[in-house]
Length: 426
Image 1 (cartoon, rainbow, N blue to C red):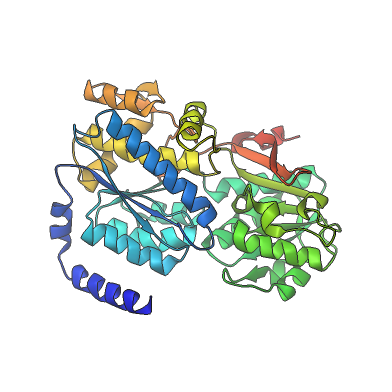
Image 2 (cartoon, rainbow, N blue to C red):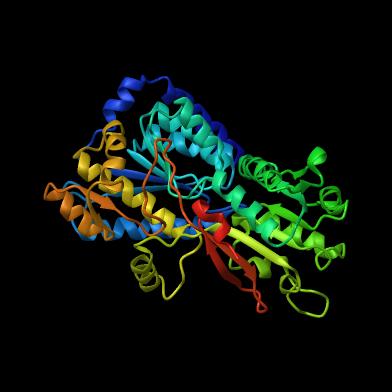
């Protein structure tokens, strides 16, 4: 594996010596090529694998109804291994070797941050289904992305206030924070703290926040930090693979039943209870805890139809948390290319909002949308995850699910709220 990375890095350096002009011109081809940059192995592969299946299904659906500009779309998939550096190398491959026009991904915010500059330099449209760090909005405002960055999941600038409102509604006046130390964890922490304090809340460990590395395997110091000072609740921000180890550590210290927990969207995994494990008497641990979680509610106008197609294709399996957003990200690239009548990323980016934002005929079926575009009609694609109306920073808004862990260990959605109406949460 070490030899592969050295050899690949040398190849990337050789390719980087080629002029940007050559890369831009070579991206124009007779048929559309799209890449996926997703975690098929590693820490967040539980999300990446179903996201990849969703992208595969969208391309299969599109090719069955004529493809783009009368030709089949090619999907080239790379595994970022849940590691930002690998993601950057994989994006270089998609850019310089495969010469894709657009990329669906990354999944984790840290990987997207490592890859997006490569996409921008090579005029590749990058649409993430699940990178929620607010830093992308800030960079987009500065013009860093030159319009090549979009995402179909709402940023944590919305989720932070949602969590703050939940805490206040439940009467949690003092909250401690326990979070993974990466772009995702830091971004959501920075969105939550001012929102909670604006509501009169106190961050118990604000002067010594309990951050831990994404590759940590023990969490003694961080767990003890977050439960000191008698907080009314502890906010845990992470993905399920490492987050489940943190939850197990909390349980083993006798703290799980003592203090309520608020869990971020990265922990909304159908297998979370199984990952955390069972007690000495053979019972699942998590259902004994007082847990409230948040996650973007991926239920746009096309969700029911998407769910039907997905379950039929994958033997009754339910879509995962960011699958609807992946469907929309892939669809947006497809529809924009058909509208642009081009495979050049520079041209495709100018048509993303043309096919997803008003005005235009509202349409949720991708094949129907393609047909309307071919007829010369303007469309307003409304997706499986949301209405897919991108603002000037490439962000969308959306609703949020409030969830808990049921007695059988499953994830149960108990309420839905919107960023525009946080007081509606009861």
